[in-house]
Length: 390
Ligand SMILES: *Cc1c(COP(=O)(O)O)cnc(C)c1O
Image 1 (cartoon, helix red, strand yellow):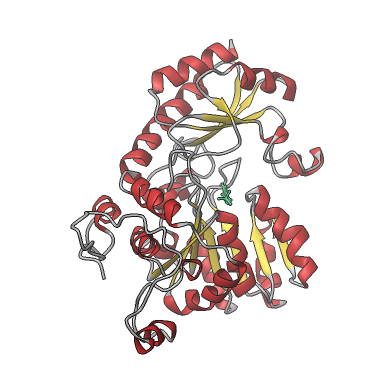
Image 2 (image 1 turned 180 degrees about the vertical axis):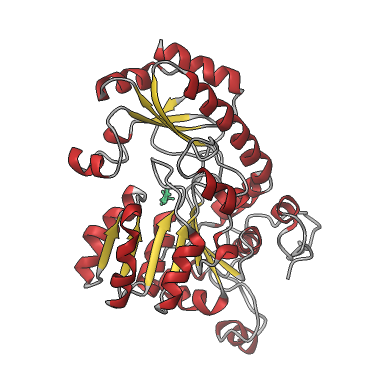
């Protein structure tokens, strides 16, 4: 157990693991090692059979660089345990194959890869999946009565930043003996901790805010030990382990998570307020704006409103494309959470695969741009948006 379990988040992000390096390094170095040697067969069997903790083989996750990362990750969400993965999708796949085999209900908009996995791929394995909109939440009860045992959603969602009520959904799911998993990638543990609100699992694409520099691909799944232990063999044999180099890089990133996200919250709020006043903007989607429909719920279940802002340009999809192409500081790239600000037009990138009717049903207009607000100066970002809109 780490020495700082009760400490505040920023302290836990830095001192969140209990391992002590033999040479006094304050952080666990990169153990590129694939296998670890034992003094005797008896010692080896103690680790293989789980009687003693220890390093054994890196694909199993039994590696000091990965242990240190997982202990820190668990602390950030107040989870009993965290498993690290080579990507966010790997974490989700292991979750669905372990706990979703009796059926998965996905509520609201989700990451494109998640929707493809749930709508097209898991059904090939005989897994029943149901994709409902946030506005169709009254269908949840009946779908759970049919036998689905896992409810999955993001909040705030991508790209409309719709807020879903974690406490209320957990109450409905638990009444049916189903478990609840929240993809907390957009909020990060700084702004929202779903396990404290009744969720059973949290997944992250650590590629985004946890990594924070657009230079690593990783994922994590967190929850209680009883729920996570059955995931272990799936991760091991799907081979979806994080590399030690990436684990170390991600541990490095976590040490600045709190200051990064708090600054991104503040800058995003300033950018959202400026866009709200801009004559060429039809609509601003940001949970921190009092006029935003999800604002009250965001105030209840979030500690900050995040770094993601979506805007509808007054005009057509082509007009929005021109604005995106004219931005200089906001790079045109489909990701989020890095130090550099990014822009995407959902209808040409993340939601390109959907028909226009389906995008409309989901409230995603062709004139929408999604901004991931980075760590640049707010005034410079607003000036960039103004020149591109001008
Ligand atoms: C990027 C992303 C994922 C997938 O993560 P990868 O690390 O790219 O596999 C899942 N959920 C959300 C919300 C994301 O933004």
